[in-house]
Image (tube, rainbow, N blue to C red; front, side, top):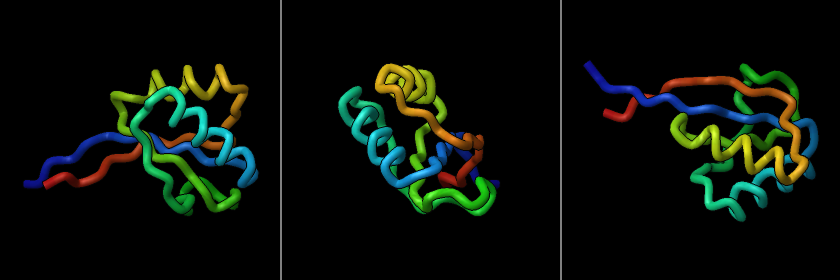
Length: 81
């Protein structure tokens, strides 16, 4: 049986919103990966940010502090082994 790890994906209405959010996470030194928006988030700008579950509190604090607003948020799991 393979192990899985939780992560959260944030989707944004516009590319500008996604880039502002990414800069906020970089400035706050929050681990993240820029990914194509998963279909499960609907029709958004096409750029999403994937954050490991243990980092979501820091990510959301950084996004709120920067005035960045995500349009969609989904919790997912990924196979790690």
